[in-house]
Image (cartoon, rainbow, N blue to C red):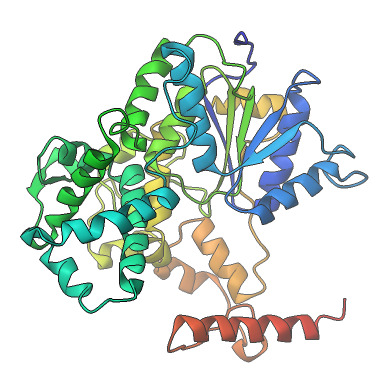
Length: 419
């Protein structure tokens, strides 16, 4: 194991409203806080495109941020790294071989197990809804499609609803909601707990508790006992270009922040804390990093009329995932903003106003500053929309048509660009 020698501890959050600025700030942080020459930095990303962009940025030099070469870096998806972290921490505390290399509950493996179990389950009256769907399926095509959808469903439950699975394993057909309220599983959905128990029985006692929800509980307990970083974990973890992470993953990263340097780069469209436009005042008090916008009332009701008076309606209508993520992140954010800003010679909350000579720029500036409609309508001069193509609306009758229109618009934009 490696001793803890981090210059910065706790979950460090760098945030800004432009991806390029976040990239530059991240590279500056890496330059100011160099690791041992042979130590490796792990980047967690949500796509190969972001990974390639980061590697290229690291290798750039001469007027651009970068070091002329990209070495000592690894890239991984969050889910894959999360299982690696489970194995490293649990086995460091409980001993080797305590966590399988891959989970038997992985979606790719669960699909075929469900394919085999479904015919056995259909004799149970609880599975009548599935039996009706699978009727007249001699080629087993419906069986495969259903097994694939159910594997995906249980995969999501392991990440976002592990408490449901724990209750179902214990024989309690309940759904745990916010505030620890419990409701019985609707009668027409009771096949879901029954099917989950069938999967556990098929795996046997040795593997029944190897799903991510159960392993996560073991990880959280083991992480509290860990004082040194296992050699299988990187000394620095950078999360970049990920719009949202589930609570489980954030808890893993926050737990590792005591033994590794964990830097999370948050693309945030608004410089003010905007979770309050739908959340209660109690949630707002827990978040001290971003200030309240001047003029925002202490009590903000949930009615659309109140929301649009004091905040931008697009954030209220389309920003739910971002709001929830911001709220989750606020529970783990340990950034010493003053110390970090002094180290980097600039703010770690990097919010810059965009050019406002187009409708898109004005909209981005309104969201950045959390302007309500009444304020923005009196601020911006009227634009000649026939000459402003920064925002376009297309009515499409299907997702396929949406992609076709987007494809055509991109081709037209490329053709018009002389560069």
